Image (tube, rainbow, N blue to C red; front, side, top):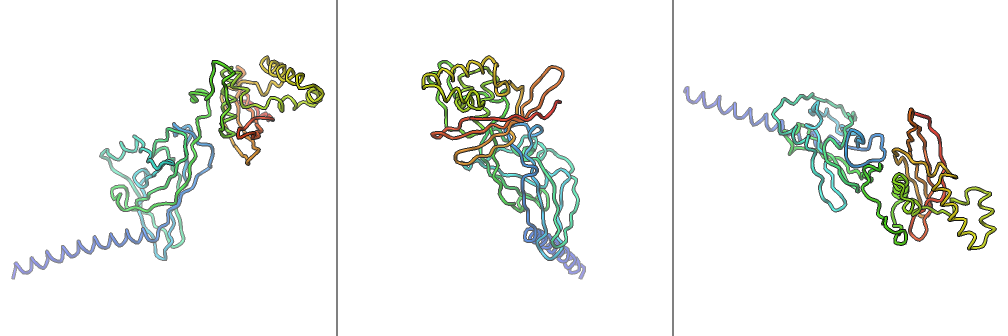
Length: 327
């Protein structure tokens, strides 16, 4: 009799454990069914490789209850125990995880979290820096999505996948981080412009000026149109023969090199940031923030470079400058 009673108690305990496991699995399945996870860029700007502190890729994450019942899930205070990002390039090669992320997850520690309950139609949002999760070391187009773990990373095989974003990482915009300009230095005779994007044209032109490489500086510049920006110069130029026009172009270049005219276009910034690029099939503009050190203060200016495509190559043909004050 005693053995029978003990057997009944044991069976009930096992049954209770099975019911508890099934209840947990049903709750997780319900969370997966009723939770929609979406991502978008937060304050989207120009993104470059490297340091996440200086140039973060902030992602706005939203978890929404699309069901009729209360949605419950766990959310870690350190979001690295609640979410993951996957990123692949155009060749479908996956980017590596950040070393600090790997260290976090492989170190024994207490993970603090809170229970979140969302009623039907409610949503919960937060922002995370993509570069805290994956290494982005090269300029390219990447495709990213996110995994959300309703029961934390410890149950990482249970997750909800977000939508996919397309992320463009541009070449670094500073001269220090730009290691090369794809033109030869030894002889101007072999310099050939390349079919690169308008922002890259402007970037390489500024870098060439920073390095006093005049051949590269003029490579993507429509010097004739720049000369004709001034009405008086334009009238004199149009009145000349072909030989006279060539001489005027050479004289114009010489004056630019000596900063006798158009001082804004040949000014040398200490640093610059490409702010915005817009273009159609034939015309475009590139806005650049440029910073000039004047000893006791720094001038900040916005340059708008106007570009035009000719034979598949983009050329700078005009510009305007807006003074934005000092720092």
